[in-house]
Amino acid sequence: MRSFYLLLLFLFLNPIWAGTSHHHDHDTPYEYDSHNHSYNNFSFADAFQTGIDTNGKPLYLCIGKLLNSDQPGKTWEGYGRCNVAYGGKEFVVDRFEVPSRARFKGAYWQANPRTAIRVGTDTNGKPLFLCQAYFRGSRQPGKTWPGYNRCNISYGGREIIIDSYLVLGANRQIQGEERHGYPGPESIRIEVRP
Image (cartoon, rainbow, N blue to C red; front, side, top):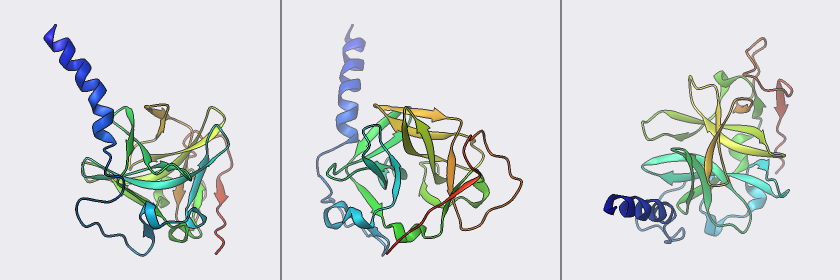
C-alpha cells in the first residue's frame, strides 16, 4: 500500500517538477544567439508560426529546455511557457527560446527528411527536426529525428505519434522522394516577410 501512495505522489509531483516556477528568469546565465529570444523580451510578430491550434490560435515554435536537451515545442501569445512532447507526455516547461522566423527564411514544409533543418538536440545527443501534423482539426508542431518516420506532437497532456506529417526542410526539393504517408502536397513554400 505504501508503494501505491508513493507512486501516486510521484505522478502528481512529476508535472509540477517539469514546469517549475522560476518563469524565464534563469538561475544560471543563459545565452541566446542573434536569432533566438527569451520570452520576456520577445514580440510574437517575429516568431515562427508552426501551426494552428484547435481553437484557431496560431502556434509558434519554441525550444524547451528539458533534461539536458533542447526539445522543439509549441507556444502561443500570452502563454509564457513551452509545451514539448517527451517520454509519452506533454511537458510544460518555462525555460525556453522562441526562435525568430528569420532563421527559417526560404524553408519548406516537405515530406523529405533528408533536407530537414535541425532545431534541437535529444537527451542522447541526436538531432531533432521540426515536423507538422494534422490532428483533430488543427496543425500541430512536433519533433522527429533521423531514421524515425513519425512525428511526435504534444497534445492534451500526452505525446502523440503521427504517421502522416511534413518536415521543415532546407530551401531545396529532391524529386521522387518517399512521401512518408503525408496526404498533402509534396512541399509548401513558407513566405517570411520582414
